[in-house]
Image (cartoon, rainbow, N blue to C red):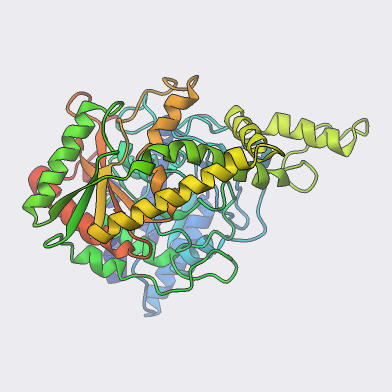
Length: 499
């Protein structure tokens, strides 16, 4: 096969060809490394490409196959890893100058599980600094472009991972989702992104932003590929105190047997209205009609607390970030500024943070510190947590009536780089549909549902499932994906327009 043909394969197809001997893992790795070299100068999806490490992992897979050892379902498949997971011997920057050049001495649990499954890690992807953003413009190392239109954002904070998928630089990627940072990039790049149930994937070794919201998850170009990756990274981890000690739901089986026949699908009235792009609503309404055609019953839902989710999130997340980022003091690891013998330890910490943190990180630290300060804790952070309880109760009531909920993933398609840089509120609204799920801890997926007619850019359909019912995402997602591919094909299995 040619390199061009190899990079167009799905992860499942790639793994099958490696297992059968039709392709070697080294051939697959080299094809994707060549693609990165050819197009990433334009896209800027990667912060670090680990060519030597990837080829060594690929050779190990080929040696296993030659010895007749059984290979896992993703053995030899390349993956792009968001630069928020510690990776032994490989730089981990979290998109920030404050960790520039830091080489972790250990692997995150998720990284360990990828290596144990013989997934080939190509490198670390660009992201909004400390995962704070909705566009990957807040990276200290420059923005990533959307392969559909390089002048537009690829979503955030995991824009590097989504862009790597859309540009065929990797068939699989890992993201993290605090307020929508897996699903929102998936929506605007025409890929699949899943936020598992909170606690279903270990956070050990994932650099913390907001500990009660952060969740790692799979990113791919098809629902089945996402399920295969989800199964590899999920499961209980004693090193993570928030990890759920329960079996992983049958997600791969669900992805292989997609169906919505007889299911009750909820549509929340709060997930549309002012601020939503006409083409996004048009594609969403068509998706709802498609679900009806596939045998689902559509149920209208009213979840009034969802209107308060954005406000609650932007008190809870900054509060937790102000606490988590206190560890970056310039004394223990990472950047250190002003340590010339003339400054006290406090001054060194202050100078380091001034130089190392970007504007959005500083903004959220200040907001969070204020919300947690004496006299304001109950009025702000405490009240936000009460709203969070109301949102969870609205979800609980909704799931008494329906099996899953669907909505647009984002109110608009990808906006231009720089368009919202000076308007934080406009930027925050990009996560309007995704934030409630993070606050409640539910599972959710975004998958492509067509292109908006006004700009010919991807639109995402969000599917939300109850806690630990992640298999429902894949059951519904696979059914919808198959129906869409039958009607219109899958544009990303061909070529992103800008490349």
